Length: 534
Image (cartoon, rainbow, N blue to C red):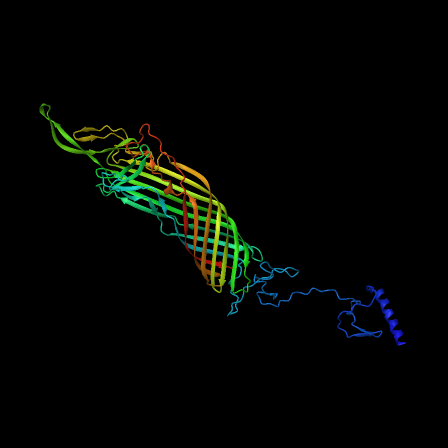
């Protein structure tokens, strides 16, 4: 009776479930699932009953939220994977529905357990550096100024001739400069970023003075040597000497370099945030502009004060001529094909200016390592592109006669031992110095393919949580540039030099034009900087 009653109740329950909208049961016994209730007995069988409210079926799966069970720098508690940084390798976060980027805080220091931020990838950074650099001196391939005994006139190869400037480098000692830079990582994982840097050196000069206008004896003898194109023999333009006048000569060169680099950054490797020795390696690629501007100048100022002794005669009775004394009259010379009388001041200038402008792409690697408060970093880059070379040559001269007698065809007229002065206005100019003359004066340009390697390293200490001070060294090399000392050709036709007595000679052959002689250049030194990172 009892068994029949139970069967009836079970049948009614099944029918009621269908009528109340419950899903029909499939054929066969219900699937056993874990239950919170006690085991039930039905028709002599013991089985685990379904969870209430499921109609006898397993419950719908529920996605549980992640549980942070690890340390602050590894919240999922997965640990390093193969030693290549945060799981699952150098690229994170982990895949799946819970793979959203998670902030990776800095690892705590071993002793204080405080989060100081050393070794983590920054969001952004800025830095500034003081540069104390050196460069390759200006190579002067040919003598620019000589001195000798008056009889040798400063001609190269003469027994008493000494080279004062030339056939050696004019160095600059140390350059002062600065470098500024800023950058940031643009993505949440701090893998892709951008950096802009630029640096500038001062305009450094090397200037040398020779002679002086106060030495009226004209000693020492100073001369500008050259090779006469018409004869092929060494020759000179004498600037000072006895019975000619004193001279002051200025020879100098200057140099300045600057560069700017906008580059993209791609982080290739970064140690896990919990690593005590934090390391990172970045690939950089972008654009580089570099400019090297240099100048070489030779300037002389001569006070021509030579005098000519003229005898004074007196005509006596019966036409007898008697020598009664002697007088001094100004000597004559030529400048620019025009005669001048003394005292006259002669100014001669040669100027060679070069500008090398590089435009190209740059690629490289930079690395950084931090251990506690100590930081080290280094980089190696190479730029490939076009070097635009620009050469400007200027030469000129002028004379000034304070008496106003020079500057025109002079026919002196003596009366009573004096000179009747013609009006020549006393001023004149001419194009051409000595090495800078009408054959090469002008502006010339050309383009060349160039490769510029560059590398450097720094070591520093973290002063605060985000501020680091460091010292380092850097070096760059440019294999092909034009420099002024290499462009001053010694081969000149004397007929093209205004201060030469042969100036404007009929039938003279024009001298050779310029040739872009290539030279190499290096620049580098030490740097002292501060970097702020967040």
